[in-house]
Image (cartoon, rainbow, N blue to C red; front, side):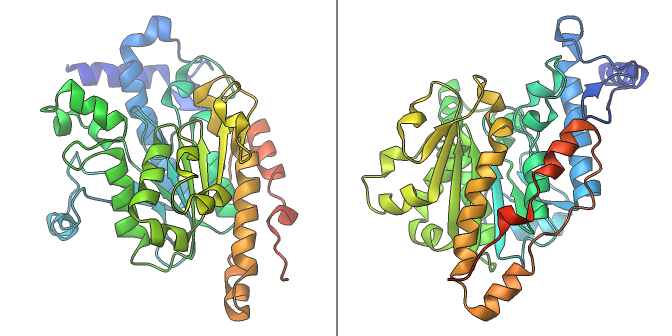
Length: 353
């Protein structure tokens, strides 16, 4: 029996699953214990990734798309009929190519895949962490508002060691900062998502939510595609990472200031920014989950400004895409109750002037 078979047998015997409150527990309701089960940590997270991606597809209607590092590789991938291990794969809603309103989510460092903010929060032994560990609260809220969604895959080089096995420690360090490693940096991925999934399509109200190192990649896209970015992007949320303030004094800095909101953990420098605020946590990894309500207040406000400026014929069509009630919200317990109670028709209203 291989090591994988042994791990799989252990996983099945323990009966690991998400319970009705979305806590990851074994068949006896026990949380993962890193002290006694650390040998299974990576295997557990591989399984969690599969389970979460399955949920994205089956419960929320996402589909997986390859976004190759090279623009010319798309046709080749279609001909091959398979996605190479080192090729980023994003998850998108079915309407991403026709919906003018698109939310793009960019996570931070580590082996976190689309749908995750911080994988360690799934298995830290504490209950009630799912809404901070996963991007599901953002997904459910955006679906409720009728927005298309793109979940980026900026960490593919780290998830596929073979793709960067020839890199030196220095080049990997540069990649972690968003720098250039043979055109496969986090910033390169976000740019490729823009080129393949935004630029050719009628996305007129693009909104970014970026966390940690993902904030750098998003701001790099602003620098690289500035005119197009300013024309299409209506809101940028930066979560406990780069806040963009170093760009405010540069060309188009006033636009960036107006369209950006930063949220950070307690004690950060963002509290000194007029467009930044702290959220009630000292834990970096928990910032996205704690900030979700405030994030959507900003996103919906910026979105309402976009709606209000549309010509009448476009206004009524775009407004008709609002409030696509997510029939897939099947989560039980207090987490679902809190989420559903936050879906307020009044919070997403827009008024003609």
